[in-house]
Amino acid sequence: MLIVAVIAAALAGSLAGIGAASLTPTKVPTPAQYAPVAREVYLFTVVLPFDDSVAGRPVHDYFAPDTITVCKGDTLNVHFFNTEDEAEDHAFAMEAPYAMNHNLPFNSSMDFSFVASTAGSFAYRCPYHQPTMTGWLTVLDC
Image (cartoon, rainbow, N blue to C red; front, side, top):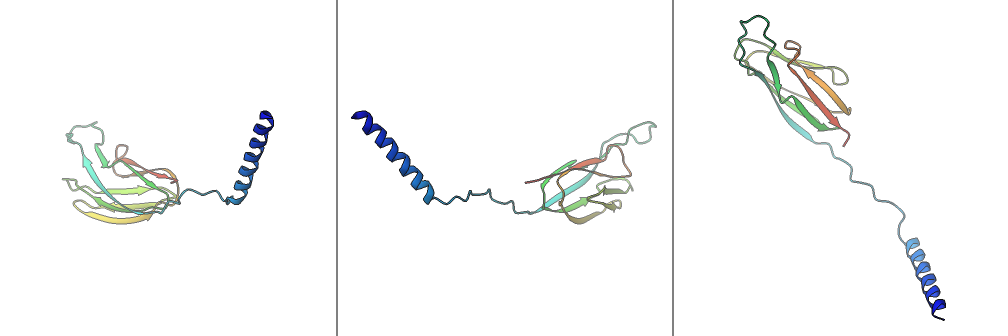
């Protein structure tokens, strides 16, 4: 008799669970969608204190920061500053899909914007100061 009562209780519990599940909506919630944002990026030219008059010295200019990480869809508002103490131009250049080349004269600054529409890692360079003046834009598929 005890065995019959246990089996009946288990069967009743199973049927109650099945009935409750049929009343619950079957739609599975999805994760919240990422809302792209505008990101302010301050980019500076930096010169290491090498003696330029010595032949064979490596190029010593670089970007600060040399890595920018954003999410796909974000708008980058770049504030680019040429902090060079000598009359020397710099540039911010990228290949496709972000094809651009912004030349920055000595002792000046500029602002430009673009949307990070393609995920991946992309180099940005100063064509005048290679190989050291290279940075990386990483666009995450958030």
